[in-house]
Structure formats: structure tokens, C-alpha cells
Image (cartoon, rainbow, N blue to C red; front, side):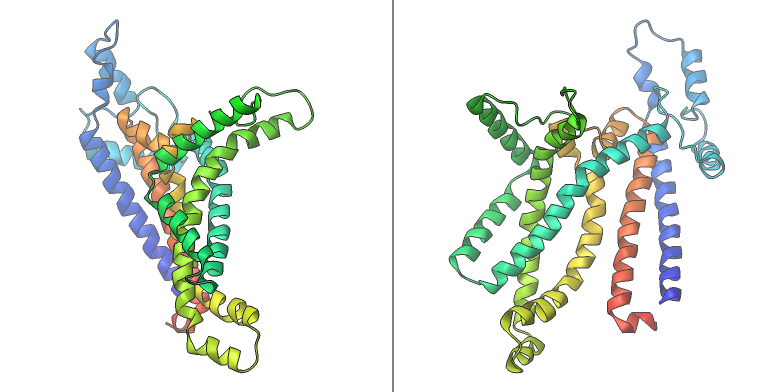
Amino acid sequence: MTYYLIRRILNYIVLLFIAITLAYIMASSFLRPEELFANRQPPMPPEQIRAYLQGYNISSETPVLERYWTWLTNVFVHWDWGYSPQGDSVNGEMSRRAFVSLRLVTIGALVGMVGGVAIGAWTATKQYSVADRTISIIALILISTPSIVLAIALQIMAVNFNRATGTEFFEFIGEYGQHGDYFGAAFFDRLQHLLLPTVSMSAMGLASYSRYQRNLMLDTLGADYVRTARAKGLIKRKAVTRHALRTSLIPMGTYFAFAVTGLMLGAAITESVFGWNGMGIYGVETIQKADINGTVAVVAFSGACTLAGAFLSDVLVAVIDPRVRVS
């Protein structure tokens, strides 16, 4: 198994390097930082703009391959991912926004995964019952609802609740706000601002994961080994948890590995609606602001997250499937 995993890691490193290289070439070819200075008042002299951009290694007058080699050397030697056209350090922005996304995504992902698996497994054992049909309808409605609509609907309901109760129970703009000076006030303030974004993200996870888990459970509940376990006297609850549920979790584990990594950059709409400056909204801003170095850094981060998910999936498959361990 060790040889298999090492081989997969090497393949992923090569793929990541190729993806980053292509991203840099495309970003350098199509993004024009010079246009950001065209409407400045007072206008900057062309020579000053040229010197400014060359200092950050993002001038289009310098050949792309020459810029790429300078940038690549700085990354490998100094771990310096460069600067934006506004002079902001990409390293600083990436480190700050990655932790913002991590705080935003972690709870929502866990609630969505655990809750979705539990709901899906339970409804599979109650197939065609009133509860199964009701949950299926709610899940399909949530899956069909765009995330921006769900987020705004939650905000409207929160505002109405605050007005009806005369309180400020729901705070949902930004990561934090004004709070008292009692013990733990800052912590509870952050939890308060995290509540609605977490509900918005976890609702989608609960709906989609429960549908996957339900279908997988229905396949395993009718398998021969489950019926054999029941015929040997194993009670239904243990047959479901020890055999049907465990087997159905194998493909779900692979799905989780990729889905969680995608959430780090896939929450741009949620971040925008609730005022969180995470990786998702940063990826959009780098393109809008012609930030070549920032765009490449976001692609690198996204690729690293995706390949980390792929590696976790490989580990899971290698642990479960003995044929992979001897290949």
C-alpha cells in the first residue's frame, strides 16, 4: 500500500505543477493590470506605471516566460507568491482568507455530512413512508433552490424575527460586530455571526448527502449478506448498522473527500451575501482586479485542496480494498 500511495502522491504533484503553470500563463496572457491605472485622477505617467508594474513582475511588456521564471524562483526559494497591482502581499491575503473560509466551512460541512448520512440512512429504512416522502420533498426543494436565494431568504426571516421579538438575536453581516465586555463576549459574537451562514451551507449538504446516502442504503439493505445476517438471527438494527450502513459509507467517504475541499472555494455566494472575506470571494476579486499573482495563488490553493481530497480518497480505497494494497 505504501508504494501505491507514494506513486499517487508523485502523480498529484506533477499534475498540480502543470495546473499552476498553465494558470500563470493564461492569467499573464489575458489579465491586463495596466488598465487599472487608465482612469486614475490625477493620471500616472506611463513611465511610472511601467516601473511600478515591473517592480511587481506583472508588466505585460515583459515576456510571459521571463515573468514566469522570476515568479517560480521566488515561490520555490522564498515562498513568495508575489503582490497584487495595488501592492498587497498575496501571501498575507491567502493566509488570512484561508482561515476565514476554514471557520466558515468547517461547521457547515460537518453538520451537512453527519446529518445527511443519518437522515439518508434512516429514511432508507422507512422507504415510502410518510416521513420518507416528506423528507424527500424537502430535500428536493432545497437542492433545487439556488444558494443565493436560500441565503437571502434566511436573512429576511432573521430580520423579521428580530423585529417581532425586539432583539438582535440574529447578526449575519460580517464575521463579527459590536459586543459587550463580559467574559466570552467576543466568542459568542462570532458564533452569532456564524449561525446563519452555517445554516445556509449545512442545509444544502443535508439535502444532497441524504439523497446519496438513501440510495446507497437501499442498495445494501437488499444485498444477500444483509439478508443472511438477518436469517442467522441478527436483529434488524445491528444488521443495518454493522453491514448495510458500513458498506454504503465506502462510496460516501470518497464523495466527502472531494466535496469538502470544493467548499473552500465554492462558498463565494455565501461569503458575498453574508459579508465574509474568504477564499471564494477572493478568487472572484483577483480576476476582477487583474491580479495575476493572486489568481495563480487561488488556483494553486484550489488544486492543492482537490488533490488532497483525491489522496484521502486513495487512502480510503487502499484501506478498504485489499486488491489495491497489492497492486
